[in-house]
Length: 327
Ligand code: SF4
Image 1: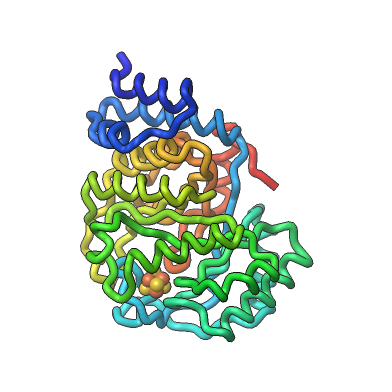
Image 2: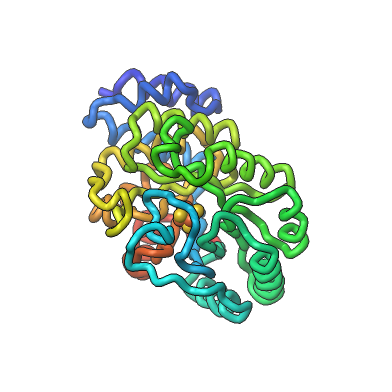
């Protein structure tokens, strides 16, 4: 028999077309593990209702690797940790365009430029804008950028260059954020996210599960996302990187990883919930189930500093599950 809380969630999110609110999310977060399959099925129904079967495939491009001034404890690109990431200089425009061509050839419709910085210098911003113009003139890709903390005056050039979307993750709850990073604040992240929307760009904002946060933090994180109302919510699972403060953290239990994807879908029924980094190591052979838990997008490996599985496996999975890759 379906758990009554799931019945209530179905009534609210499907029949009434309302997002799950905080109290409902908290109840769903504490459902016994045996009810999780029903929760995933509900989230998959909500995904089908609002997003159909189209799956947005994205490839990330690390245009400036490592050497970052910040101390995000999960990140092997921080200059503060002795990790296996070799810092590299900012790519030239040709490097961006070549990477975009490869992403397109791999079947991606979205290309996300990522740089490991606190925020972009004038030179970096100019380079990203020039590269975006070059990419948009040649390829039918949605271009997203992940440039760290952005000021108000840095948005008009991005808009003019044709950037479609800005990624800036909250990562976790406001309460837990200081345990994740001490060199910038949750409020700085929040401010960048609100500026993205004020400038009319799509906002991509999500985070990482498994950094030591509580169930309550996960609910707070989701309700904060509801407030920001991003177009896209990337969900990553901590892949503990050697040399970082989180190197000894345990992987998220698969059932909790799947549950979180489903909760994100119920909290943000119309958003693109993207199944992102750490999915392979966390879910192993349960990738299919992950895609049937409410996700409507996927990032192909690699994920900046970690690899994923091969594209053929991911495309075969999408095909097997009856999804259509969006052009
Ligand atoms: S997550 Fe971004 S800001 Fe934080 S250390 Fe890594 S590259 Fe720097």
